[in-house]
Length: 104
Image (cartoon, rainbow, N blue to C red; front, side, top):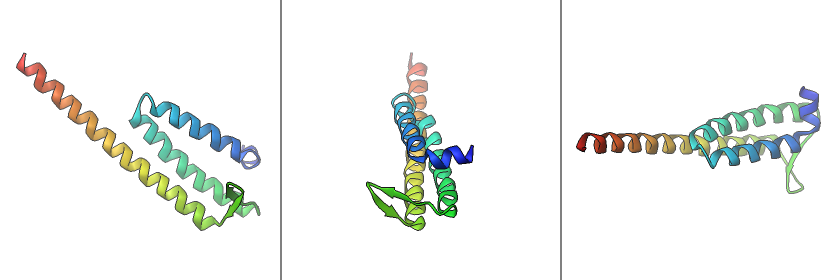
């Protein structure tokens, strides 16, 4: 499995991003949770890629492992903020529905 992942890393990344974006259209909370796991898994996989002598790049520009960790960490933090925001909005909607149902 690890060998497959290492040799098809770009394809796996593309499929993962498409799945997260697609799910985000329907459920932001689930998409954020999936994205957090995805970026953590990407950082772990990058460790193995660099350990095997490989390298990751963005638009043909090779990136150091520290930059990859930084990007994965930044995307993870963005998704944590999105999860927090979506959870707060869902709670506000629930509270609003309860207030409206009590008024009837």
